[in-house]
Image 1 (cartoon, rainbow over the protein chains, first blue to last red):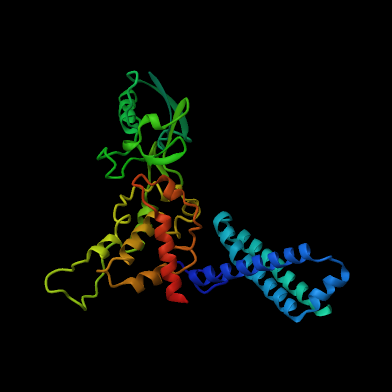
Image 2: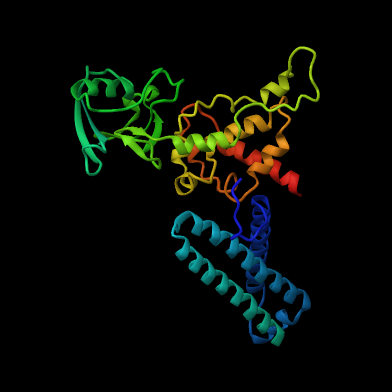
Length: 114
Length: 236
């Protein structure tokens, strides 16, 4: 049993479930947006009306949170493989998680304004 | 027929760093021998050349080496299976080299030890004479018990290269599943609890190098998939 607190989940299986559910959500969001671009004449009005919909706003927020979870666990896995100096790994992980957090906050602020 | 070999040489007592040395072996035309036989002939030329071997028939798992970039057992790999002008022989990658083709397998064995590779039975349901298995229960062990611990799979696995101290590795996990699925073992839950962290099992990303190199034709990735399913079933 290897203990580790730096990842998001409480256990290996918890991480495994979170990263996959988040990944599926990210894929669904990407497919939905692709479908929207292919089936609509995309302009300011149609874009604004899409994001004015409460369902779309919730979907977007869930997707941003999924992105945060996916980045947190995924980058932790990559960094623990390839970056062995602990100090450097800590700084990189902090920077990447901060960036992912910023995306969530920025996304929330943008959606709030629509 | 001439065969040229390029062999990894390193004696830490003498050499500042490892180097590749070329050897030439004269063989009868049309003949084909195993890599281990070639190594034994080369050792006659150069007695300082070091490698492990024992049973010479793919049972003991002593002579795992990297041949032309792919891990395998020297004793059951014919020279005719190795292409190219030169046959390049290196020690199994990822573990410390003791000398020439001999590696220090301590980390590999430490991971094997972690999975408690023996039957654990709480004795609550003692049979009158012995623990019998049905044919179906015994069938579940096929494809698992045959592992000979040659380390070809674990030393071909990038996840094991990066975290040999934390990731159990394909061989250890194949053995772990062999005891998890054994009808006579009663410590399934404790075994799963020991494996439920972010490294021991879940560092396997299904690269499948282990399946590609296993000289016994086993499938550690499939066993690891079963362990993940057991952990998921327990958690959800």
